[in-house]
Length: 561
Image (tube, rainbow, N blue to C red; front, side):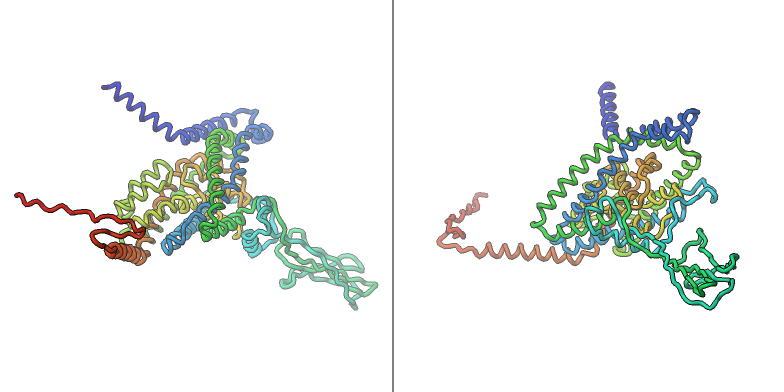
């Protein structure tokens, strides 16, 4: 008996290990990477200035990042087109439209919440003094309006092929225009260097016969200014007008936003085409399936790549204690954001639209939420079961919202990606303008739409967001050590969002559901009436095909008691 019990226990342990093998390998890789990095830091031969050694140590991790970048383009296109193109908006009607509006609204709200929290808490600046926070990158004279226009231009690329490797950007060129005018002045004089609208300092010329001045090199944010030279012999005044001339050019890097917008419209058009668009939709479905198989292969290599990326990162860091503090505050930011969205924002929406206790509804979804936390997968099966049997949601609504939500609705993932992108920018001392913040929000929302309900898919979609704002993709290693844990919490919020959405859509569609019931009843009655009008002649039934079927005889009731 004991042997059978021990054998059963071993079998359960084996199954548990196999089901969580990827997570175990990732955690093991992270642990070995941390130990290796800390160990090498104590070796005098390994210092932050040993760039070549660090470069070689990072090689397996660079291969992992290259494979992730390689899959960004096919993943974006295939996932978004498949998700939107596969929606049967004609049959679902208003319910389908309400479902999509709910998903897009809550996902974008989660992104905005995450951005507000990460900008308020600033986890990437923890452990640094203000003097240590030096802004990276080259300062330009571009205005916030330029960044906003660049964002809009990116949404509509001139060439979808070139959008795969370049994006539009505004640069400022300084043009110097010489203007010569007659002047009665023949003596040395003072002159003013002025902005077109704002006066600047007065400069007195020291040379005899001419008076010259130039704009200081470090003066910026002026759209135009003049430099005046006064001639004593010719009686002329030469003015040099320097004007900022904005020009749209291209910069290296994938135009992720443009590709996403194109894919969204393409998917919606395929959905409206119906049967005519099905062959093309089948192609993108196959492309998506093949891409996900490749992603799974890459994810299985990730423990090795992550190990060497973390080790090399620890070796080149100057202050390890600061980065651990930053990661701790990053976790806090994500968890606070998920808690606010899952326990306040979503229940508030349910209360407003349904006018019932949202926490009772959430309690009835406990089985689905615990399953999502344990498996890190937003499978629709358990969600539909809890919706139908525990919360008594109409099965037609559950069958529409839950499967679509498990693919399209990723509130927790979108919040996590927005926080992670800005956190990585803060760690690298890169400040974002308003255009880049909007890019993060839109890209995180769109990338979350294509995030499949499988473990570790957020690793690839995170690469999409970082690529969109030109952040180093290899810095994913800063957060990958605790991503396996955060993945469970954000997946739970994803499933909760699906469930709340089903309750809201059912309430808003109650008239449509009642009409559908009436139509089904009328159809059934009409069918019954048609059956009762079938002609019977001489004990036989005439069918449409003139096949004569005898009326079945009914046995007489027995008179024996």
